[in-house]
Image 1 (cartoon, rainbow, N blue to C red):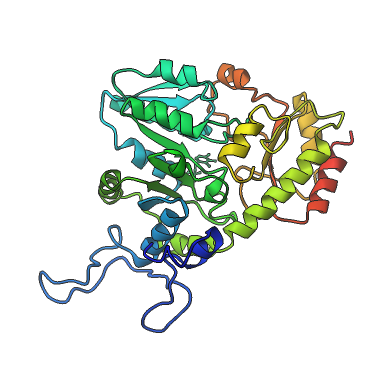
Image 2: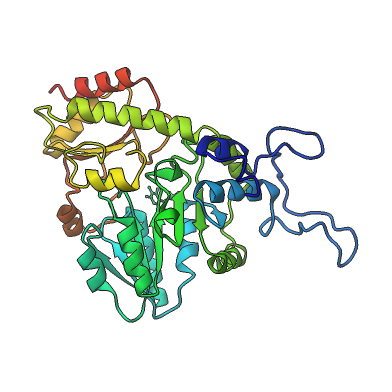
Length: 385
Ligand SMILES: *Cc1c(COP(=O)(O)O)cnc(C)c1O
């Protein structure tokens, strides 16, 4: 971060921060420190590295890099996106209340409801596109406002600047799950977020070959608490996954550009197709929050959800796809398609799902970085039924 003067822009930072040539040999990639412990010089004297849950140079390099990309003060890496969320919730204490978006990632909802309610936290789920609802849900014991933007899979946006103000006026922390946008397209800390988190499994990893998570904070005081939790609760990632993330982040800018080019190409090509009953992509002028997207994001990302009208249509469509692979997850170089009701969002109660529009006919496309023309043709061909 001390190099911020020379490394002004995103791709340069992504390639260089935390990734200086190694001091002994000049290796241009950060070495993989695959070790659990470090030799000490004598009793009471060590190198600053004692045990790898607490300190690992490969992990530190990744944390320094992603902290800079999110304009944060510091970052802490975890073994998965959910482990990152788990660590963030441990900033709270029994009796605290959290206001959350009603359409978060299903696993987040499950973590909050099935685990943290047993430890005395309580949660209210609101439509975060409605600022009045956020305001009304605040209680005297509300200590955190938790949002995801854009959301999975309905691609709804939170007005991050406005919600940050509401949270701060109440002395509550504002947390943003920035997995879908990535820091390349959206930097919530610059809009007022105290904490940003990621499932690094998705775009940050970008190659569908690892599970990881990371938390970035803008505040020194929160950083020291997160560091304590990371070490005390211990959900750290392995060094090799950090090494892969350092490799991945070097192409984040290029990948995000192509993910978006492909999503925009597909969305425009199918928006008015007779078999499309609805399309959710913030890059389309028809998206109800297109103006907000243009204001708070520098791009619209690579995820599109489409409504096909019935389970049978969704099945026909998925079966006809050739390039898109049916799989959970998103954000990899290869295009994936998912049926949220039967896959990622099974843990959301049916009533809640239907209220949000997560129907049996909804599919979510994670547009990869293949050639745009091949993807458009694949989707158009599958819609021809
Ligand atoms: C996948 C995902 C998570 C969970 O991350 P894991 O790495 O699978 O634990 C959290 N939030 C969002 C938005 C996700 O897409």
